[in-house]
Image 1 (spheres, rainbow, N blue to C red):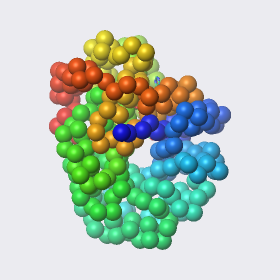
Image 2 (image 1 turned 45 degrees about the vertical axis):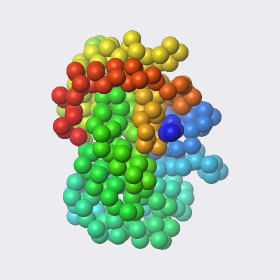
Image 3 (image 1 turned 30 degrees about the vertical axis):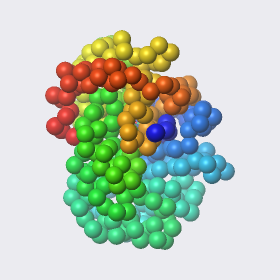
Length: 313
Ligand SMILES: NC(=O)c1ccc[n+]([C@@H]2O[C@H](COP(=O)([O-])OP(=O)(O)OC[C@H]3O[C@@H](n4cnc5c(N)ncnc54)[C@H](OP(=O)(O)O)[C@@H]3O)[C@@H](O)[C@H]2O)c1
């Protein structure tokens, strides 16, 4: 069964301001609640997230820190080559203060990169040189996930999987299980929509991607509210509210739903403060959801969400 980790994008940038004190408190609360897996990237706050996570993880060998590379230059296939990998790897190892990265993921590269042997040969070389212990990919689409899973050296696939993104359940999770590839479920709360805290009057800061990337202006629109139109998302959340089990918040319910999917290794909710991190970790000890609840999630998806996302990612 999967575990609850922590997504550290919020501790870098793009989600309004999170101070360094808040960032350390968030990491501390997550680890105190049993979290041992942290996901970051070299571009989150241009290295700020990696640096904070690195300082926090020093002297805590029980933690696995996954980072990502590949978005410091324009995302064209020509940039996914060994000299760039070496430069990005060097910088991430410096930011994180380690000789060997636990796990490095290609950060949503262009689709042809998944079919380029030289890319994976280069990653194998970095493993042989002990610059990275293992590598994986962070993907946008199910097809990209399947191409990556077919590569023998790929240890993990990070993919959007939540109550508003059911397509990976059909093919990606079974293929990953068969190949022994780990699944890292990201954007589990649909950027906070599935916390149930927002309404038609909710606004976000100018420096928050939930303001500036609603139409995919800065990066793939699927990363913001899971690609679901905000008002549709609110309607779906209202329909889900009655099936949230007593004792769980909507956010915990959304995380529990992911943990109940066979083949998920770790779910990485982004938390912006200590109380969110503590509450999210508690989803791991909640009871599995009953079948009727899983069916209710599917029904809401089919009615409202499927038309917007299913054929797209
Ligand atoms: N391309 C990629 O590889 C990629 C892309 C996206 C994300 N990721 C990774 O996945 C992680 C998770 O995804 P995400 O952060 O985009 O989205 P998410 O986890 O779906 O949503 C995060 C937001 O949910 C709200 N939230 C979190 N815990 C809560 C709680 N207990 N109660 C109420 N609200 C809560 C917070 O919203 P408020 O800010 O409103 O409080 C938080 O900012 C990231 O941190 C990052 O590590 C990777």
